[in-house]
Amino acid sequence: MDAWDEIERWYEAQSAAHLILPPASGEQIAALEATLGVELPEAVTASLRRHNGSTDGGWLTGTLLSCDGILQEVCVARPPDQRRL
Image (cartoon, rainbow, N blue to C red; front, side, top):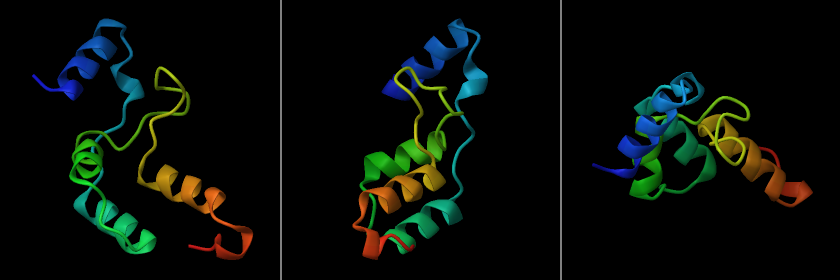
C-alpha cells in the first residue's frame, strides 16, 4: 500500500472522494515541464498521474495543486519581470 492508497481510503471514508481530481495526462505533465523548463521529480509526476490536484479547498490543509495550479503558483513566486509563462 502506498500513501495515495491511504489518502484515497480516507477520502472515501469521509464521503469526500469527489474532492480529489482525476489523473493529469502525459501531455499536461509534459507541458508543465516544458513551460517551467525543468524535469519534475518522479514523486511529483507520479502524484500528478494519480490525481491532478484537488478541488479548491479539497485538501486537508487547503488545495492540492494541479498542473495548472503549479504554474500559477510559480508565476506568483517569480519576480515581477519574470512572471510571464
